[in-house]
Length: 110
Image (cartoon, rainbow, N blue to C red; front, side, top):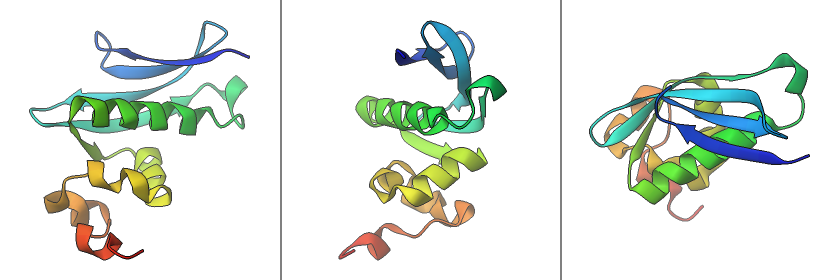
């Protein structure tokens, strides 16, 4: 199984493809310094394969590489950030409380 994640800026979404077929996407709204992630969906025929996490991890890693912040309006993206605190720094400290995320200083020391 060949899995790839690509940004499709014409559709404002990152797509996960399995053997070349579209298996899911996470839709974003580009802003000045952040991307607002709005919705993530995996095709039912691909559910249970962990593709949602593969997709969101790749999208967030791309945001880090671009030096952009993330606004996790999508519940799946928000849960991913909550479960993977190494991605918390992508959410700007000034808006973390809006998403129920801890401020940066709570991460220090563990």
